[in-house]
Image (cartoon, rainbow, N blue to C red; front, side):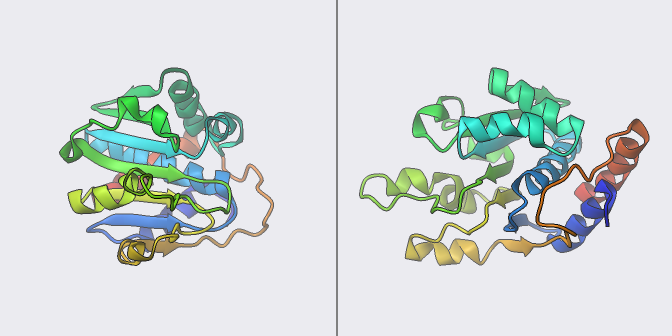
Length: 210
């Protein structure tokens, strides 16, 4: 299984239809982030709304420009890193980071307008801080959106952030997804020709509408 379309099909088979919350936990961060971003972008093409991408650090977002596995995702991150906001068909993508100071564009977005959230974390340390006073803010991107029933939440992270005991209920709502990568070393597996992208779009149009 070496083609992007194969992985997209496998992703569609693993995530539930009614609520697409998935945890991508394997170590191929850039491969998984590419798949998750591409899937969410094609959902945004057919279902207008707000889509949030929250990345661990600005440096990791910059790495996605170079290390994402197809040109569409590379271009999306290039635009987001420059402007922090990108209009795509009838949807708007926003980029912010784990630093609370970067949330000025996103923290006041009405929850009912949010159609999808992608969180990308490269390191294996806990996402959440346990210091008193930080807890509510650190839980914002998961616990608050659980109550809002955001239809799509993708978490790309080697570990699920369960530093706080009451996150177990949240964790149970995420479907772990896995891919049969042939090597732990990330390589540019995915074809980026126009014909391949057209094929990928046809596959995704079926998946995101199901």
